[in-house]
Image (cartoon, rainbow, N blue to C red; front, side, top):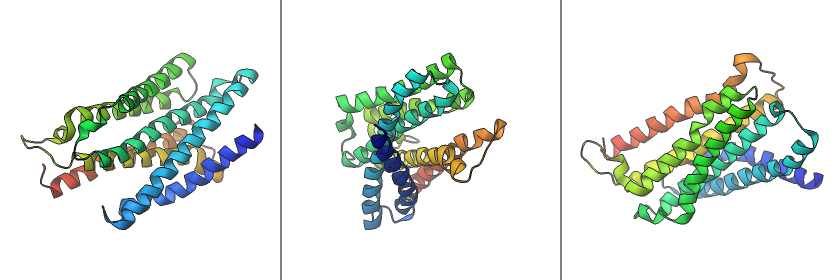
Length: 244
């Protein structure tokens, strides 16, 4: 079991570091170009490996938590990492799917994607319940970030039901809904990657001991930067295609 733990741990750590660097290549490369498509494909597969190795590793910790009666304050961050992994897997998978179904978004109205929407809602509900019932020290952060899963589920459901008309403005339709969904999903996954690195990576690499309100910064900074960036970037392309 210890060997499996180590394999999953190093797979996750190495994959996470490579993924952080690789993420920026499709972001800054020409959209639709060879580098964008090829590096984007590599990144999405790497992201799946990273989140699945995290979930598998967390699952192996459950018996130890139960057996040793570990304090919630010591495993709350693992719960958060599991939540982040579930939502990240969903948005990465969704970001790829919208490209494959861009001509007919209704193709996403399948049992699989309806289940992913419910799973996204369920992940948020679990985090909220855990925070309110267990009341770990990180409770304010867990509650602050719990809407991510809800927002993800609502956004997916809206696009599947409405298609590109989800982005209709001023009586005009949209032909690029799939693009905006793809951009939003991949940027959302990038926010999750950078949040995990800020919370569990950089503070340990440099032995940074943050206390009090300052300790909240690594948890919320990537989202505070990334969510406005999602909005700005989407608006940029809407202007480019004269859809606003």
